[in-house]
Image 1: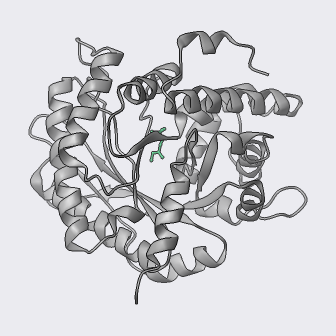
Image 2: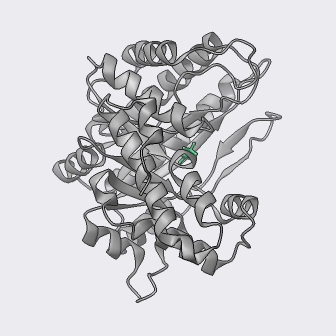
Length: 343
Ligand code: 13P
């Protein structure tokens, strides 16, 4: 089957369009249950639908959000008036995306490491999602840093799966978000983050090439290079930005249209500040934007907390975070934005 290269390239470019980034609202039911319970909300299909609907109907979101990644349950849910979420987003000018991996599972023979699964039956699932309106997909590989970790076996297994997934997506006319996440949990230094992230990206791009993935038709979703969250010495914003770009320049081919970073547990303001500092430095061949989960979804969730009189306030909190990150995407975020009125 020949690829619809023009469509893939056009979609990928739209995902990283100027001034915009991606909302990662694709928490699995298990993860969303943790997030909801943390703010005192019981997790049911209805509470998950209500909260996602609150975000997707926030007026003006499309000014800063190019696409939304959803979980299978959400992808099949509707607004109160019965409009399927993918259709609603498409009407608003936002690209619907779908998480298609089935999670990180223990990697046999490699204690403490995981491989992300979901390749079996993926061709058929992609065809179904495409019929329901999906324009892009996501698959997240998880790499842990610790003494002696990650292993080469873990890197290879995850990179191979990411490349097979990406090739299947492109065959189906769906742009793959390629997400190899190196976790920043732990005491490791930023030097170690750099060493591991570079090795991961080298392996991923080797495997993408072997599987004949069209680089112009993907979006890379990586971690930034940070000091491990428990490292006693924490790199500042400028150092994170400089080192992340220096590392990526060496490893990420210029054909990739855009890099949409994950937030990975950083505070909301740090996630915006790091992105802004990278865009201020600039001079790179790819668009640099966000594909944040927690750094976008956390604020509206805390405001809403199942109090339906606060829907408008929660939507304003989402838009505020989207504005801050969109400013970061242009290199124009400053801490003072955090003190602007939210509504
Ligand atoms: P975070 O921004 O919370 O890391 O989530 C992004 C994501 O989609 C992880 O797969």
